[in-house]
Image (cartoon, rainbow, N blue to C red; front, side, top):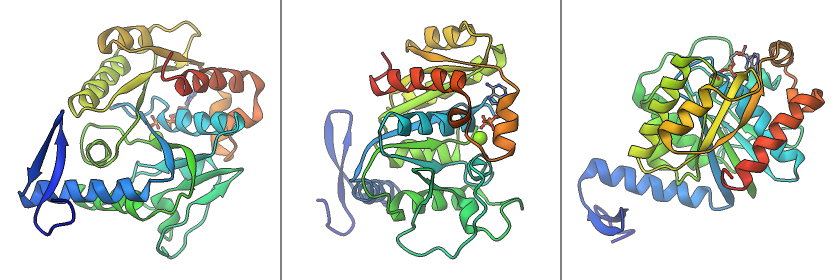
Length: 273
Ligand SMILES: Nc1ncnc2c1ncn2[C@@H]1O[C@H](COP(=O)(O)OP(=O)(O)O)[C@@H](O)[C@H]1O
Ligand SMILES: [Mg+2]
């Protein structure tokens, strides 16, 4: 029974089952608390690839700002707990004592939370084992006061374990935007990411080809393998490094890049179509 000590109900597929095993019970109960904490958040979208360096953070940040420009209320969560980068892309340099509930920072109308906001020296390595990473992510999900949001965008870490597993287990996700590049290895890892999501019952909204030549190649391979839509392409452009190194958002600075992201955001809002 929900609320009763030592038992809870959980939906597995179409069946509602009674859960009593302590480990599964913990996950079910935390999932219920996260659901409550995010009651004011309409949509939860992860930007994900198992491979590093393909542009997950770049896509998450610019997609968030494109959605904000379209009039939506948007939050960004740095789910790369041990190697946070989001704050650098946004020029945020704040460390503070965590006060509960956790308050996101606001950057040009987008709410942001990252581990980097709660460590003294945001450039120092955070060396944590998996359980600490999962604990911190759980805390972000349970204890952040986002208020009312249309979209919460999660900038995921690479890999297919720890924090990404927690996201898939703890959050009722609308789904993932999978990021690839034209490179074959990136596409292989993007497919791997999609298969993980699918195995855990999380929808794939579509795939974005970053660092693209303009016509999707890698994204077509991924979309074919995962039977999902290509949401769009973002061309390879050296300006991305300049913008992120100076904490500026490409969408706010460059009309051509903005157009690419607005087009992707429109398809995202449309459920991938
Ligand atoms: N479309 C692009 N064209 C050129 N460089 C890009 C593009 N997208 C991202 N980058 C650069 O690639 C690097 C990795 O991007 P990042 O978003 O940090 O990837 P990830 O989060 O997947 O590790 C960064 O230096 C970023 O500025
Ligand atoms: Mg990143």
